[in-house]
Amino acid sequence: MTIASISSSPDITPFIAKIYRPMIRGYFGVAAVYYAVMTLMHFGVHSGTDLLAIVAASTVASIVLAFFWYGLRKPHAFPNLHIVTTIANLFILANVMIAMEIKFAQTDLVYFIIMVMVFALACSSMKQALVSIAAVVAGLFYTLSKNAPELLINYAFVTSAAAMTAIAITFFLRRAIGRTALARYEAENRLEEAEKLSEEMRHLSLSDSLTGLPNRRAFFETFEKSKDDKGAGFATWLVLLDLDGFKAVNDGYGHLIGDELLKAVATRMQDYCGAKAHLSRMGGDEFNIILPNSAEPCIVEAWCRGLLEYVARVYLIEDRLVQISASIGCHQIDPAEGDAQLIRDADYALLHAKKHGKNRVVVFCDDHAEVAAERFRIEQALRVADFDTEIELLFQPQFDLGQNRIVRAEALARWNSPVIGDIMPTRFIEVAEESGLIANITLSVLKQAIAALKKWKDPIPLSINLSGHDLISDPIIARIIAQVEASGLDPALLEFEVTETAMMADTHKASSNMLRLAALGHPLALDDFGTGYSNFSYLRTLPISKLKVDRSFMKDVADPMTEKILHSLVGMARTLGVDCLLEGVENEIQLVIAKRVGTHMVQGYLFGMPMTAVELLSYIEEQGAVAEEPVELGAVNG
Image 1: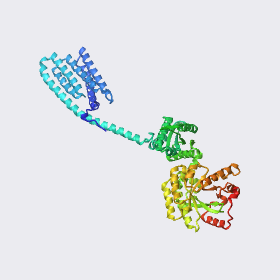
Image 2: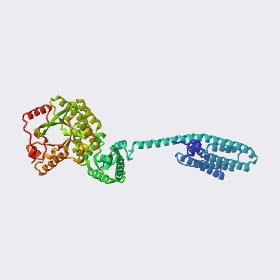
Image 3: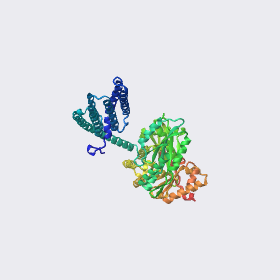
Image 4: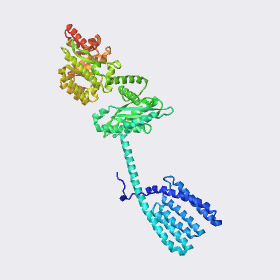
């Protein structure tokens, strides 16, 4: 930042004028009062045309001076201050000249000397001072040459001395004021630069560096203000937008393309929102909108659907056609609710939109409120839970029809929270995954499973579920490996189950960690097979040893297509050279179907409900005591 110095000769005239302005205004005020008083006194001294002339002159001077005094109360009035002062000086000189014309008196010549000194002090510029002093000297010499030529020489010396003194005073006074003005100029210049820099820094602190949109901080500032805004018959809405499949764009095209896509999306959203709504980027592919003056939920929903359609149009980025969709959750802002609750509710609506098909709008409603409140309670309980003591492990057998025995058991977590009691497994697992707390449960389940295996005399292999969060987290996989290695158990005793959807979150990272586990000797099973993408290419390359066909395929065994689909899935497993297990076998008919489609591994209530470790060991003993001859699958397959 460069500040002007004396050597750079900045224009400090406005600053000098600011310093002189109150002085000159005071001068005008005193002079105006003086001539107002003189106007009254003239009536006692003069008469006739002399009275008319002198009264007219003093009255006009008083009015002009009073006008200038009044006008100078405003800081920017009369920008050319030196012209105004010169006019005022000439009115004062004219009054003296008219008085001398009416009646010459040698004693009154002192007024000229006084005017030289006063005009010099009241001039804001040297040029103006010289003009005013020259006018006074000219008036003096005119008066003397007309009325008293003999005094001309004497007064010439006196006036010249007064003029030189006045000019010197003006020069040095103006120089001192000039330095003050320069200091003020520099101070104001520094202040202006500081304010400009402060505003730039504030703008940067409130802006997203990638898209230029307002950032999280700016959003929360606007969010707080919006809670105070109330319009008749209208409401303010919080709209949360999250892009669908943005990570796939990053993985497929690279982060540079991903960044350009975010910029393009931000530009479209800005165009759509205009000045009507406050748009901000919260980070990643998340955007928040504060939409004011919207009455009905249906109007807000229609507006949001229009935004989704606009965002979903194809983008041309570096000669690539890229298409992406988004999901929206929105909630009416209630000033009585806390910020965290409002955002949590809108986020729940967004999550609901994501889980039910994406590329859609969900408006938070009363039904959501109850579910969201329950979810919040579960999440809070999860955050303070001691899983090692609160999680109970149950085991469900996996039965080999060919060997006619239990070959493995799936470890299932059951949670009895001391805060909210028993919770359905699907519910707390879902909330734990969404809130990023699932790893704590996984590690606790693994710890208890290892303890059970070490305790059993003849350990039966166990199967443990890994979430998507676990699978793509290097630190969690490292802790899992460390626990198993510290136990001294054979890794083959611990199979890990993953789902197709879990792998899709980050296929590269998931594949890498699955290979790490397989390299150590852990079997890997693909759970819920048939409900996801069933991508043959990654099934062929990943170290999967078992496909677990989802239980949903066994629900409608009366449908002829069920058997055909199951037959094709089992055939795929056979082609890949891996085992195939059918889940959900709960009755004899389903067992017959399982045998007919060629699978030899099943899991379901027909072969055992989830049970404790003691019950599992007892059940295995009973099965061993009454074991039948192995089933000939070839005969069944026909």
